[in-house]
Amino acid sequence: MTLLTRPLITLEVEVGTLVHVDTNPNGRRFIPITGGRVEGSLSGKVLPGADWQTSWPDGRLEIDAHYALEIDGHGIVEVSSQGVRHGPPEILAALAKGGPVDASLYYFRTSMRFRTAAPGLQHLNAMLAIAKGAREKGVVRLTVFEIC
Image 1 (cartoon, helix red, strand yellow):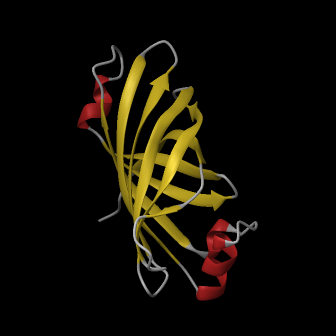
Image 2: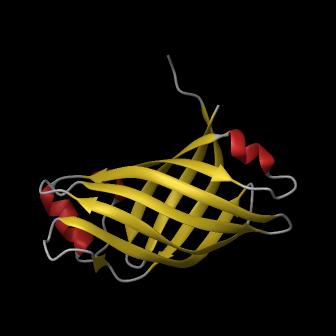
């Protein structure tokens, strides 16, 4: 079985400083989502939210982000995104330092669900999307695809 997808949007999600919920280097933490842009078949801006994460001793991150999009000419779309990021220790260390890292060197994927009452966007409510992510200094870039 082949998974069929089609491009939906690209998100440039601006993020703040990492906040540890516990004192262990591994464990619960969150990164504030401070804004950003929506481009592609829809355009608009990313509204504030948070990316809650669980960091595991092997460097793997479990991601649980919740935020909203303000789509030009339509209204607000709630986004719920769960995923995982992992890779070789040296690549994860470079990401943690905020340096430029080629996104093909690590795995960063999320599943996304949307909720909205905005006219013209209600088809998003019945859709499951997947995203391929790239982490850059101060920004997460997500290329989002509708699963057909």
